Image 1 (cartoon, rainbow, N blue to C red):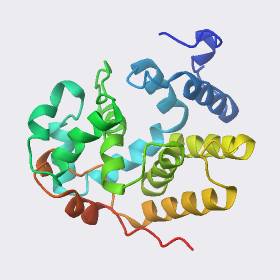
Image 2: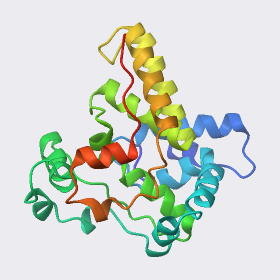
Image 3: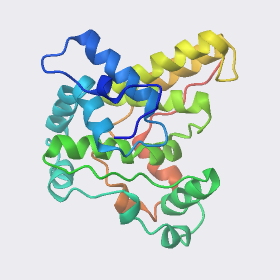
Image 4: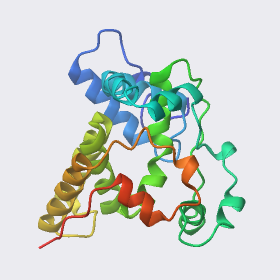
Length: 235
């Protein structure tokens, strides 16, 4: 496990029967070193164990209620880099989900999610699925990849799924906003936008059981209308 030299890797190990304080402390430390290495299976599994195992277990129960959800858990489709043909997706008509997804990576000069995580159960799969749909959510929600856009997306995920990791990121981002206004907007606008994104996530259908892979040729606007509640008007 490669970690920030300023943080001892031993402090990122979750002890058995760890307290809530210890779980939060370790999760916060992982957030400080995971950027650029989001596919690291040790980081991913540890932060899930710290905060979200029971959340994912509850989400699995919700997903199993629908035929599409049960099929998703059975087939375990993947949106990892090795399972995507970005060149083929970019050849799809402009405005389609596939074309927009491929252009998203080109325009932002980034690559799709990759991990070496071994999927031992549905919980591992749903945790992975949540992470690899992050970039697609930027596309369908319209939230940007700047500081405020990333926090808006986390607030949306918190409202939609109840993911505690998202809550921790929102809290950490809010602390940075109070400290030095990293988002580039004033505190009033920041607060309005984050709360609006959270409420929008709450009002939207669950997105984790959606087969994005079957909708590459659909217009982004159609997928967005199906998955996302309308944006609130900002006063």
